[in-house]
Structures are given as structure tokens and as C-alpha cells.
Amino acid sequence: MSPERFKRINEMLNLRQPDLTVVMENVHKSHNVSAVIRTADAVGVHKMHAVWESSKRKMSAGLALGSQNWVGVSHYDQVADAIKAVRQQGMQVVVTNLSEQAIDFRDVDYTQPTAILMGQEKHGVTEEALALADHQVMIPMVGMAQSLNVSVAAAVMLYEAQRQRQAAGRYGHNQLDIAERQRILFEGGHP
Amino acid sequence: MSPERFKRINEMLNLRQPDLTVVMENVHKSHNVSAVIRTADAVGVHKMHAVWESSKRKMSAGLALGSQNWVGVSHYDQVADAIKAVRQQGMQVVVTNLSEQAIDFRDVDYTQPTAILMGQEKHGVTEEALALADHQVMIPMVGMAQSLNVSVAAAVMLYEAQRQRQAAGRYGHNQLDIAERQRILFEGGHP
Ligand SMILES: C[S@@+](CC[C@H](N)C(=O)[O-])C[C@H]1O[C@@H](n2cnc3c(N)ncnc32)[C@H](O)[C@@H]1O
Ligand SMILES: C[S@@+](CC[C@H](N)C(=O)[O-])C[C@H]1O[C@@H](n2cnc3c(N)ncnc32)[C@H](O)[C@@H]1O
Image (cartoon, rainbow over all chains, first blue to last red; front, side):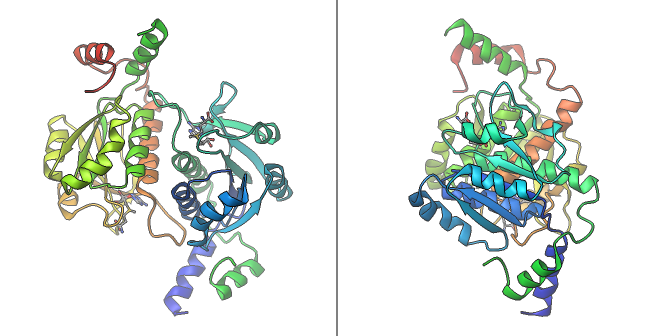
């Protein structure tokens, strides 16, 4: 690795937000999956979670994840297992959903450890995910379209988190643990 | 038209922001084009602008625009003509570009009449567009990816405009002119 590249990766690792993540629940179009991971990387997400409704989906859309190995991805068959994993890291679970019960997405404090859950292109999030969440949020829409594209909605959510975290000085110092930093520096990404 | 639908369209028209628009410069993947227009509709954009580098592109990607006729689209061969059109409406031109010269996208006042210019998937915006713009802005990125997906970047820009406009009370009253309202109500969309 060149000294420039080593420096670049080091700087990137200094800005990682290990307590901010995304759970994709059955998102299955590969261009959406790759846009979500690219945006997650851009705001400093270090590790993501993907729930797959079938192994066929995982094989096809999951490919989009391989192209970008700076953000790690954990895979699950059940949304409950993905939520359990983020809860074990002390995260609040914020589910995006177009409903009467949802609050404005800007009314949540994303400087807290947070997992943002995004739903499937056609059917949205499952009842199970809703039941397990702390907050149900919605991005306001004033037009005729019923919903936003899922990668667009993920980006609007993530950049609200970035805005709050930047204001709170959360991009100022390393938050990754030393062992994880070393591993990434030596292996050049997630496995 | 049912009374419910008439009411729904009327409410939508009350929230339109005729002084906010998007110019897509050679954006050519149809899933990106359709995601941009869907987000534009969601924040109240009433009319958009698309510049096409070739008529072949316009034929293929332009199809994505037809599916959604609540946001009007004007087509151009030259970016200068699109910029001239928005200037005639008194708009500032904000070009998104990944460069040293770009300022943070949140440092622009989007409550002013504004056209946001998005560039092509591979090559970004042209020198010509940069030369004609008032502001060159960038969405901060702290990861390893070089850029955001274009529809994602458009959404982050548009929801910053929405945030500023909401705070300024700009979604509180009708801003469309009466003739345009009537036309849309009777014709059920843009032609
Ligand atoms: C195309 S939408 C699903 C639409 C589905 N018919 C529904 O009602 O849930 C796919 C995903 O994008 C996200 N999404 C789309 N629009 C959103 C909005 N306005 N606010 C929050 N999330 C949104 C949610 O994660 C949703 O599950
Ligand atoms: C994939 S990018 C183009 C990348 C191209 N290599 C370049 O350097 O311009 C396509 C378009 O998305 C928008 N975009 C992508 N990332 C952006 C960012 N971080 N800030 C502002 N606009 C961005 C711009 O409109 C850009 O022209």
C-alpha cells in the first residue's frame, strides 16, 4: 500500500461512526442496494445489515454489496435477528414507514446510537419490524407520488443523521476500536 | 374526476414551489431519471428541466419521465438554453460538483428562487454549466466512495431546500398562478 493510500484510509477510519447503521429489509434491486451502501459509506457507516427474504435474492442483489468492501455487511434470514444484533450494540431502532403513526424523521435524535431500517421496494417494511422498533418515522412528501425510492429515502435519513452528528462534533475524533482499525488497515477493507 | 381526487390535487397544488427546480444535465439511466422526478414531486417542484446529449438518450431515459406527469419537464439540447430558461424566471443556479472550489451545500439559501443542476452519472456536470452557475456546491462525504449516486445527491439537495423552505413558512400558501392551477385541475397533469 502506498503511503498516500495508507493516509487516506486512516483519515477515513477517523471519521467512521460505528454507532450509526442501516438495516435493509428485503431491499432487492441491485441498483438500490448499491446506492444505499455508497451513501452509508459517505456518512461514515462502518457496518450494515441486510435481511433477505430468499437466498435467490441474496445471490442476485447481494452481489451489489461485494463491489464496495469498505462498509461491512452482515446477512440475516430474519429481521428479528438483525434487530437483535443492533440492540446488542445498544442502538435505538428507527423504522421508516409511510403511515399515520409515523413522526417526522427530523424529530429523532440521531446522535444516539441508531439503526435506520429501510423496507422493500414494493411492500415496504414488515409488521414484525414495526413491532420491534422504537420509532416509526416518515419523510414528508407534498406531491402526488406515494413514496420515495428506497435509496433516496435512505440518503435523506442518513444525511439528517450526518447533519446532527456534525453539529454535535461527532466527526472530530476516532470512534473505532483499535483492533478494528488495525484489521482494516492491514486487510484493506471488510472481508 | 371524483371529489376526493379533486381535493387531493387541489391540496397538492397549494404546496407547489414554482420557484424551485432541478436541471438534469445528461442524466441518462432511466432509474435515476425516474427517482429524481419522484423526489422533485415530493418536495413540491412543479416543473423540471432536462438536457440531453443525444436524441437516442432522450428517447430511452426520457421514457422514465412520461410515467409521472404531475411534474412538467422541458427538454433542451444545450445546457446554456436550460440555464437561460431558469434565469428568465429569476432563479439562482446552483451546480453540484465534486471539486475543491465547491462550498458546503447547506451554505446556500434555497428559499431564494433556485435551480439545482445535477450532472451525468459518469462525467458529472460540464465546464459550461460550471461557468454559468452562481454557486458550486458539494455534499460532504467522509468515506472511500468518490461520489454519490446522482438521484441520491438530488434528494439530499432537495430535502435541504425543503427544510429551509418549511422553516420559512413556504409550504403554507398557494404560490402557483391561477391559470396554471386551473389548467392542471382540468387536464389532470402536465401535457
Ligand atoms: C417504495 S417504498 C415502499 C412503499 C410501500 N408501498 C409502503 O407503503 O411501504 C420502499 C421503502 O422506502 C422507504 N421510504 C420511501 N418513502 C419514504 C418516506 N417518505 N419516508 C420514509 N421512508 C420512505 C421506506 O423504507 C420504504 O419501506
Ligand atoms: C456520480 S456523480 C459524477 C461523478 C464524476 N466522476 C464527477 O467527478 O463529477 C453524478 C452527479 O451526482 C451529483 N453528485 C454526486 N455526488 C455528489 C456530492 N457529494 N455532492 C454534490 N453532488 C454530487 C452531481 O450532480 C454529479 O454530477
